[in-house]
Image (cartoon, rainbow, N blue to C red; front, side, top):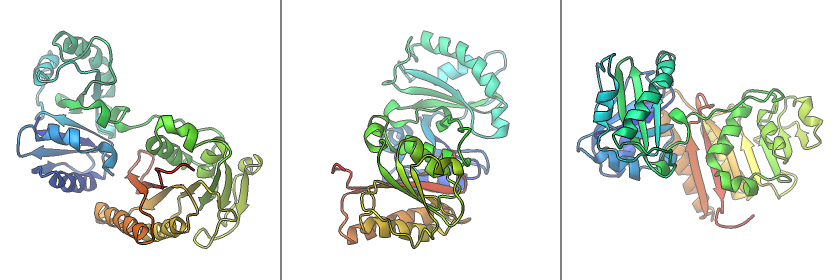
Length: 360
């Protein structure tokens, strides 16, 4: 495998490319980026054969901000014959043995999605041929590698594999979330996805449990408060604007009509702090840092609105500065994660967990 294929949001290829170049260099792996604006994917072509497999193993997907999914890939298969696309794909995957799953995908663009019906129909015969060739197990196995066949245009596909312990569980890295009819705004999906992405399923019962106290800064009209309330939490919702009446009627929400940057929690047993304010990313980061230094929360999820230029560089600098400030103020035990989630647009979502090794 010579390429690393990375799915990303259309329009963010430059950020994804800058990040993979930086992270590959940290692992002493050389290569160059191939991408086009609004393709919704990036190719990192390694100088050395086999290095893509190393990246697929050593570069943790969860540590990447702008990549939704990645897999080690062969060179682009072009001009696949209409009467037999399967044979060249199976031949290209000959070095993959006993994989546990097949995903036939497209990039997340309107043009590529036109191939989705073809991909669904193509999956069944391709799966059978891959099983016959020994590339794919007879039954799906979540512990074995995942075969990816990504059609980027009619008759053109990248093929390869990802490791099951370093891969998104979702096709193209996109979670399928349903908008609740009674949610106050579509922004609710951002926090729902963040909880699913950052909190492992086995830990959600403990860390997202009913009865917890939470604060939502910049809450109006209540999209993020809604996710806290539906998990049984009691929420201090802070915003000068109005909150949805349906949330106030639950008895779980206290609305503080105040500036989120000046608000101090009336109680000190806050577990969750969430924040989705339209403000400069550096200012939001400073606010979260102040709350962390005061030990006013255990875990926080907040969004950083992205500038138009040097987005990867600026986000990286903000996260590095945050880590430095926390350490300078005596907070040594913490975890920071950051992701450009599917329901984010021109923003990234950050998860900060203070003292993760200590019980609440």
